[in-house]
Amino acid sequence: MAFSDERGQYNGRVTLLLVLSCVVAASGGLIFGYDLGVSGGVTSMDPFLKKFFPNVYRRMKENTKISNYCKFDSQLLTLFTSSLYLSGLISSFFASTVTRTFGRKASMLVAGIAVLIGSALGGAASNIYMLVFGRIFLGIGLGFGNQSIPVYISEMALPKHRGAMNIIFDGGVGIGVLIANVINFFTVKIDGGWGWRISLSMAAVPASILALGAIILPDTPNSLIENNNNQEKAKRVLQRIRGTTDVQKELDDLIKASSVSKTVKDPFKKILQRKYRPQLVMAVAIPCFAQMTGINVITFYAPVLFRTIGQHESSSLLSAVVIRCFNVSFTFISMFVVDKYGRRVLFMLGGIQMLASQITIGGFMTALFGDHGALSKGSAYVVIVLICIYISGFGLSWGPLGWLIPSEIYPLEIRSAGQSISVSVYFLFCFLVGQTFLAMLCHMKAGIFFFFGGWVAVMTTFVYFLLPETKNVPIEKIEQLWKEHWFWRRFVGDEADDNIYKLDK
Image (cartoon, rainbow, N blue to C red; front, side, top):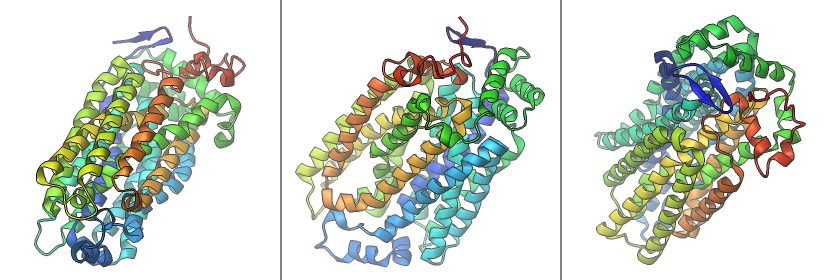
């Protein structure tokens, strides 16, 4: 099965080694998702709150005068959640150097080991300091993993399957959140109140898979050429993952890209040049917008949010499980259609779906949910259904595509720097949203949904006008898309080393 379109032709097929490499690498997404889900779940468990956040527990149980929207407003509680993302932000810059110098596998190995340490500290925590230090190590793991894994998958995959292969990573994120919600649902029922320790320590399972995979699996051909110019080994790996001996054309493109990359001493300085303006803008905008969809409002705090509208502890965790099932289902739908219909179509469909549902949720809760009391059982179910519609739109669009787009748009010479910027921006906004959400919920109340809905409208417009379609385009030839784009061509132009990535006519 050969890839062929007007931009180039690479021979190859989907091989077992390729699928295995991408699936094992995507266990890093499982780690990320598991942590997103588990942190929101344990912060809704009474024994966990009593041990580490007694003030929040007392306010939730005893003070009926506090607004429903403000019961969980605690900077210490949000620090537990968001410290991971601050740690991930800082570590992603170190990850760039490791990935560029030692290869994608090296960063993946560091990620697995750091998460193993973090999960051990979290599961054994006896005070808030151990808890936060565990989160910091988890953040280091996610900083290295999220910087290297999407690039690893994009470089391993054939152009015509790159979208689907990369969405395996976000599929891992969704499944990780779902598994965390299921585990929380059962561990909260454990007598003695120590179930949260199981929840926090189980991140060690996918971390072990990632670390072992980083030792056993091959590095990408791009990385082998970039790091030690081992063209023969790169060719052998390319032949194994493509399932054919005829890989010379693809290998030649990788060698050309590597020769350009080796002239760049400081990729962070290089990406600031005018000809890389579209990549720099996307490196910042895409992860920023992905967070401003409001998804982490749902992911971090779904159980807390459902307890806010009056559900009991176990019911709130079960509701979180239900909505994650919708997210995972639509993420896999996205995986099967992204390379057929393209990235832009999914962005548009998902954006419209998220905007409509957020406005409806905001209006519904404004009309029916006050500062005190709870929603009726029927009204609470309506909110859950609306959230399922919202998260389905996210699973179709910004969830998987927020990771896919940054991983495929950078030329090799700025790829590690560009991905580090994307990951650091992602973690920065994770931190900001995570640290401020409970305070925003307290002050803005149901208006929080209108706030994020407005952002969805902005990002959907941005994609419509400024993001070109990247489906089926070889990763080393995507630069030509910017030269043909109605807006970005004024920054890139023919003078931007056009001869290096000259397309076959």
